Image (cartoon, rainbow, N blue to C red):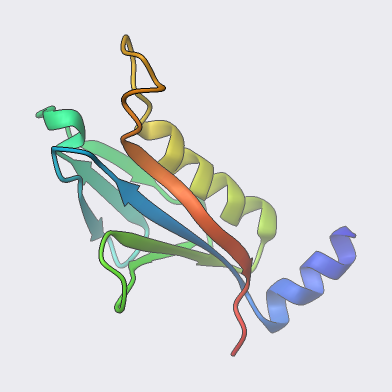
Length: 115
C-alpha cells in the first residue's frame, strides 16, 4: 500500500480540496512564501492571524474556479494529509457549541491529481 502510494504520488500527485466554511464572518485565506504558508484571518471575527506552515514538499494554492476553496498538493500522501489536517486544526471552535458554530476549514475532496 505504501509502495503504491509512493508510485501514485510521483506519477500523479495527491490533492486535498479544502473549503472555507463560515456563517457570518468571512474567513480570509492568504497564501504566502510561494505556496508554503497559509494565513487565515477573521475566523469568527477574531483579530488573531493563524499562520500554518506546510510540511516540506507540499504546495498550497487558491482554487481558480471555486470561491473559498484552497488546494493542498504534494507527492507524499502522508505529508499532504498532515498539512491538510494542520490547516483544519488551526480553525477549531473553542468554548462554543460545535453543533451550532460550524465555521472552519474542512476537506471537501481528496485523491490523486489526474493530469
